[in-house]
Each structure stands twice: as C-alpha cells, then as structure tokens.
Image (tube, rainbow, N blue to C red; front, side):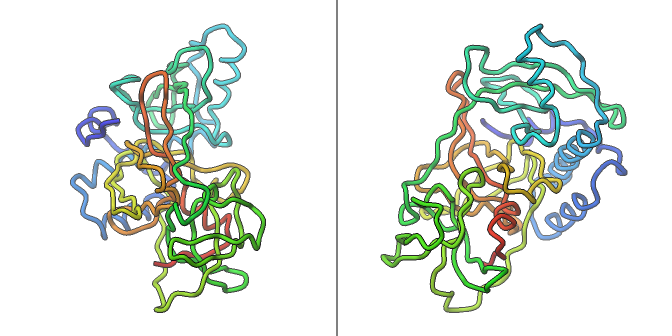
Length: 322
C-alpha cells in the first residue's frame, strides 16, 4: 500500500473521538512519543491512534450496532460475529485504495477462499462515538521472512530474563528450528546460543541465551498502541528501513496473552532474513518484532506483518535493552 498522510487525513474523522472514550493509557503514550519524536503531522497521527483504540474499547463494551446488510449465508453471519475484541484477526486502520477501496475501518483477515478477495460485510455504528465504520473481509496469506535459524534472521535487542536474570537476545520464534528449551541456536557471529523460550506458534517470539553484553545496555521503552499513520523504522541487518503502520489489532490489555498473536501491519513488507528485526517509533520506543509479509494474492496487495513488542516481552517474561 502506498501510504501518505494526505490519504489518512482524507479518510480519518476530522475531529478526535470524545475524550472520555479514549483509554487513559493511550493518551499518556501519545503524549510521550509526541514529546520525544519529530512527526510531520503529530496531531493527525495522534487522532488516528485515539480513534483506533476508542473503537476497540467500544467493541469490548459491546457499544456498537450492526447494520445487518449481510448476504444470507451462514458463513458470513458467523464472520460478522467476529466484530469482537476477543478475536485476534480483526484490525482497525486503512484499506488499500489501489486494490481494495479507499477507506478507514475494520477488517477481518481470513485465509483464501472462493469468494471475493475483499468484501465490505457491513457497517458498524458506534453510538457513543457518533460514527459508522465499514467492516470488511480481506483474504490474506502469510510469508515468513526468515531462514530456519537466527544466523540468517535478525536479533531485535538484548533482553534479560525476569526470573533468572540471564542475558540473551530476542528474535522471531519461527527463526528457531525448535521450541524445546536448551536447543542450540547458531548465531551470525559464528558462535551459538541456547534457546530459553519460544512461543511459536502462535506467538512469534523467542528468547535465546547468549553471553551478556560487554557494556551495560539501557532499558528499551515500549509502544503499546500502534495505529495507522505512525512512522516506524525496521532495524534490519542490512540497514534501517522506513515504514508506516497501516492497521493494527487490539492491544488494549490483549497483549497479555500467549493464546494468539497481537499483530499490526506495515504499508510495505521487508525481505527474507529480516524476521526478528526490531520495529521502533521514530521517537525510539520498541513497537514490534517484524516477522514477514502478509500478501493478498487475489488483489496483489501486500503488507508487513509485525508482532506487538509488548506481547513478546510478556510471553517471554523478559525485559528489553538496547
């Protein structure tokens, strides 16, 4: 997707959602990255974040109404019931204007099937927000961007076990050939690490024990609430790549789980070997672990798939350092 601030500005509501309906943690995080960052239009991005998590919050409370403009098939009715924050596939953000349709709304990412590659199922009305947003179905597949060991993947950062205090690195779980603790992991330096924990599948994160860093690193601040319009940097082994968040799943407390991945999606993917790369805000906070591409083969659309970094830290029970 070709992201631009102009596109987001044209599709996002022009005013903020009611302040009392925006979770306080979201507003506090916005204030922190605005103070540290240099965004071309900080007010626009902040408005996108507020709308994203106000929508997720109202979904969690059941404060929405279906338009019931659904085709008469049981499968579609079942999909409509997925308009719930407990379902990890639902995202809020931008649609791809070139292969889907121009718009900002909700989407359910589903595997390929014989129906349309992108279909607006209904509109959800949020009475307290005073807005309606489309609910779409999007066919996707997943391409993981790593060879089967971290020597050909990317380490995101240093981390320290919250239980034992051991040092190691965090990378994508699918970059490790095993989920068994103690498994020997080849490193790009020529040495080996030892797998401490991996939760792939479903949470694509692994903690690999290594020698401790020579100089004490600094704790890494986290971004919990990515949303469409946030500029990020993917710190790959070949260099830093600029990307923009296009849509995000619900992370309002839902990152505290190992049952399913809490994801967000970039406007463009990176390349094989970049799995495990740290995705950071331009203000420095860690937002995610890059894991691969999520193309829509029937339309030709594509995006980058990223695991929420706060979920990775929760699942691995580690603290991040850089």
